[in-house]
Amino acid sequence: MNRKIIFLAVIAGIALAAAVPFIVFHARSPVLVVADNSIIQLYGSSRISREAFHSSLDLFRPVKTVAAADDSGDDMVQFAIAEVSSRPYCVLFPLRFAGAARLYREKNPQVRAVLLEGRSPENRGTDVFQDIFTYKTDIEADFLRMGAAAAAIDGGKNGKIAVFMETQLQTRGKDAFLRALSDLEEPPAPLFYASYSQFSGISDLSCVVLAGAGAEYLENFSGVPVVFLTWIDPSLIPNDVVLVVDDSPWVQAPQAIRMAAAGLESGLIKSRFLVLNEKKIGAQALRKIKKTG
Image (tube, rainbow, N blue to C red; front, side, top):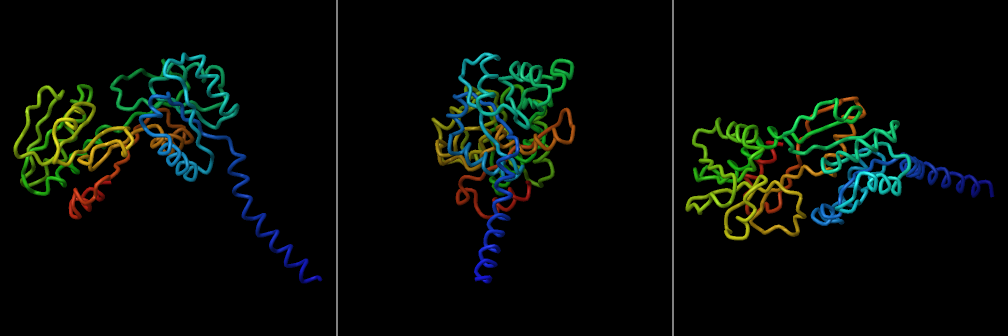
């Protein structure tokens, strides 16, 4: 009888020890990521769930998405946040909800508010968003790696790389991309375009980079590997896209939370590079791309 009681006590102790981390995890205040419904649809609900799960494990606290209507005003966003959690650890706002971030911070001074400005070139200064942590995408680091990835995909064929780049990225992005090619003995030739209308087709094209412009290329050409800076769900992207560069709030959440916890008022966050088609890239190019990370 005593042995049975001891055995049951041991089992109960093991079960309790195993349950403690689970209980502690769910007792911790969550990180909230605010997003409008159109972005959620673009990114993909299942993909958001996966990212939230991985970020939750990384931060050891729940990460939840606050879905706001596309036309939500600043006041309505406050209600949407409160419905998900009345006492969050931190709330992440994309630039689209900058006004809502400022209002939330005013009403909830005890909660960290983080504004993720993405690739926005504007410098608003600390006086505009006082007491709000503001982080940007690390454009130079991303384009340096994109240039290295495009060169790896070219694989020494010395072809041409068509780079479609939105105007706001022309300075830092272009310079960083060119730096990635400058150390090569025989680099591929990059051709930069601000819009698809400037492009008329190239015979010896080895890689295409879509960075905020030129998405129409995917509708009119095929057969050339594409590096795509986008939030679109990879399941909706054509097979020519071999590499996706993602700087979404769900990807940036863990690093943003750590930076805010460390008291960094501003900073830069690198994007995630996701390989979609390893066979089309080739083993050697794939190894080089992974090394750039």
